[in-house]
Image (cartoon, rainbow, N blue to C red; front, side, top):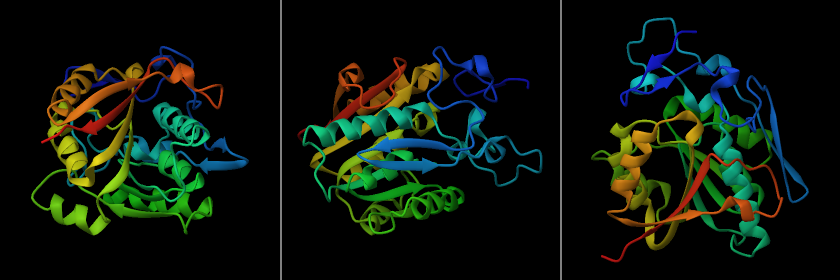
Amino acid sequence: MEPTTDDDGEEWQALPADLFCEPPIVPVGAGVFELPLEGKVVRVHPRRDAFERSSESEDGKRGVGADYARVTGALLWDSSVVLSVHLLQRRKEGRLPIGLHCVELGAGLGLVGLSAATLGCRVTLTDREEVLPLLAHGVAMNGLQDHAKVAALEWGGTSLDTAARALGRPFALILAADVVYEAAVTDALVETCIALTAPESEVLIAQDASFGRRAAWDAFERRARQSFSWEQLDMCQHGGLGPTKESVALVCLRRLPN
């Protein structure tokens, strides 16, 4: 398939096997992925057919740059696995209490939020409206209706404050994996993190450098540092609790004092 070019001048292929610098955690073309967590298994079903760019009229399709007219949330990205393993590490260390109030941004298939719910957190999984059926399916399939709910959330914009209050802000923990694809969404993403957090909240964001998008990630870091402290975590210390990947950056953000 011919490559397309995003707004940062970086190419995005339709998932060829040689895209990755390291062997992928999630096999390309996988129809199911299972992650063991404390004697339980979180299961999601990637939908490559829903990810491929629509050949029909693209009027009204979502996304920008190379992601235009794609449902990026229909696939499972390696960063979701790495962040889920980090949550398990936190539970083992006593830093993820039962009942913790969490929200996942750009949840897609929801592996991270489903993992948090499996570990006993109260989780709201959010994404664009067209992704919600995938999230609802994941919640039901994993039997997590008592711990997780799904909701549409648009980042930024004039209605953000209203939406954040409706979701039940503030959240103690904000989760996001591979959501920084375009520099154009940087401001809206940071604004959303601010709207959903309290001064004592944490934001955990994982991003896989295998996909490029370096300009977008750099822009996000510059913007995030205006409102949050920036701490890159070392996933090499996760103690063999699950798969990890060197190209995935895991960052913890905390609100700066006003």
